[in-house]
Length: 127
Image (cartoon, rainbow, N blue to C red; front, side, top):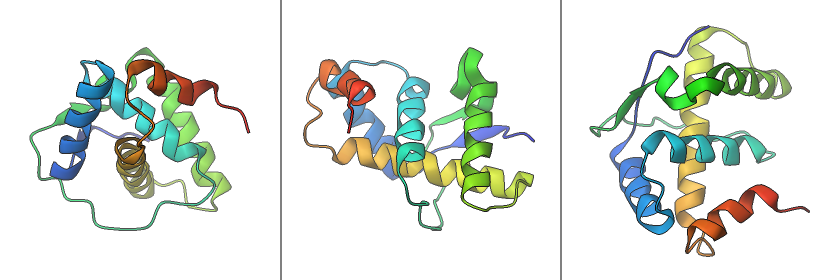
């Protein structure tokens, strides 16, 4: 199962620009990884919406995942299985896109994120 290229929506690009400014994280792919994981941590499934590919931000799956690309794919498949979704390639691409955009949206809307330290604190929060 493969996801070849990832093209972001213009809205997600604008949100990534904001997150780059707030955190100082210079690379889109690193911010996208954070967003993806934030969405996977949410209990509900992302709404099935049509996410346009209308920006100039594009990356390959290997750029998105880096040396941990296989782990990100396994996390996606585990989530799809848990949500009772088929594990075919089209559903995989769709769910990745929905999780990615939802997560970026959540990060950009989080008013408590004002610095890199605030951003990192998301990873160590406990309920």
